[in-house]
Image (cartoon, rainbow, N blue to C red; front, side, top):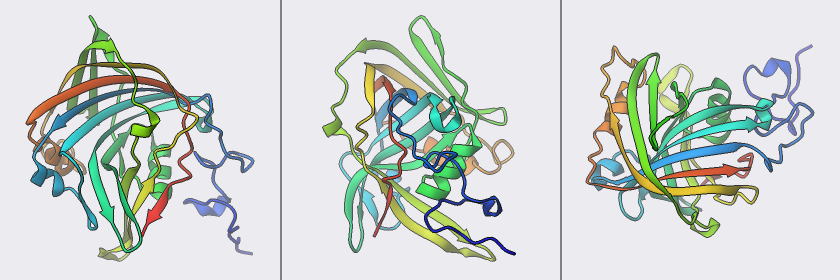
Length: 272
């Protein structure tokens, strides 16, 4: 007898084994409080770039909002409850954008791409939230004489290096300064490859009442993309090259933020 879906549960492929555990569902169907986890260490570099090149990365319904300033951030998370105490790392590129739909009008930080080094958060984030997640290798930073060195690779091809140094303690941004994150969920329709099965904007509100910033510092930074050929990164070369095409008109600040706690992102919703 075929199984039936429970409308109150959460499923992902393969659905044949029942509701799935993940960031938004524990082994007994419970939610994770995210009060004392994860522990996050985030490095970020901001730079001013060309507005036309940035606007070309926006999907339908979106426009640039405010200055064309890009934030390139690498985050290293540990002690994650939904991974039974394990962790993973991320690398993302965002800039401020505005979505204007038939119902919603929202401004926030638009996520162009989020690399992660573990399949589980990639799959759950893509399918459940609409985050543009893909895989890469993200080893822990090295630190030499106060300079933090960060790298990202795909199957051994190093496509990005960041350096952040001269860090000095500073006042962390207040929760009121935080913005929602904006995303565009796209899934192709099987057998109709130019047709979308799913194509819509999503938004995650900025509020994260359980997050506590325990360290914040400002410094200087630099970064460099290494342009891949198709042979180097067959499924991602165009992504990296598009980001490498963004001119650095002016480097802004670099920062390090260490925090504890967060949320399960269940408050993410479709923008209409």
